[in-house]
Every structure is written in C-alpha cells, then in structure tokens.
Length: 177
Image (cartoon, one colour):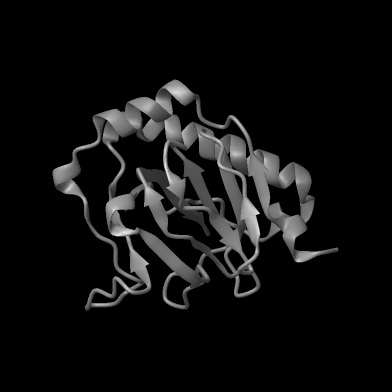
C-alpha cells in the first residue's frame, strides 16, 4: 500500500455556512505569529502564519465534526482505533496572509514532548490563490471548503502549506493522541 493511501480528504465535514461564520466572526486582533513546536524565537522563514484558539462559539460544532472525521478514518482503517486514546488537542484557527506570502515549509507533526497520532486540518475558505496543502513536495490536496485532510502525524508524512499569493487562507487544525 502506498503512503498517500493513508492521507484522506473527507468532504463536507463542516457546513460551508459554518465555515463562513467562523471566518467572518474571527477577531483579527487576537492572531499571533505561529511558532514551531516549543521554539522561543519566531522563524517566519519556516512558518509564516498566524494562530489563535478557535472562537468558543464554534467549539461544540468542531468537536462533533472531529468525531465524524475519526469515525470515517476508523472505518477506512479499522486497526487505527487500537492505537489512539481518541483525545484531540483543542482547536486552533490558522491564518495565512496572501499579502505576506503566508506558508509553512515541509515538516512533520510528530513531537516527542507532545506525542501526536493523527493530524486533522479543516479548510474554512477557498477564496485565495496558492496556499495548497502538499505532501512529499508533490502530492497536492484539493481545496474544498468544509473538508478535512487527515493523516498520520508520523515522520512518514512530511507536508506543508505552499505560499499564499492572493487572499487569505483560513483553516482549523487539531491533533489526536
């Protein structure tokens, strides 16, 4: 089996109207430059984006969507349910600004200090150019509002977000342990 078979795009896991509301109601003043793992110094060369915790108004909706996503992944890979606690790490709203060529260079999500098993990214909009979610520097995920890209967090799945050239890219991320 090819590695990319473990990368899933689940469409319509979040209603497009909800996605629009999340983007429209975000408080831009609360975004902070995103760091890489536990770094103390900012490195916009590797990760040029902003983050904030998801607006509490939407937490229950996202929690329910993550439950659906996990059930889809377990259905696709029955052995997966035997390897996780099924606890997510909370929900972070990411913003990649086109005016700043927002991006996140190729990386992996596994961290020794905070073990992660499964990575989940839900795209909230598609009115931007560039900003493709890409694996192995060549496998590009289609941009579909309300869809989630789901994949193992291990070193076997290097991925990144290519530079946004126009508009702003919004997404919600979480990890399952």
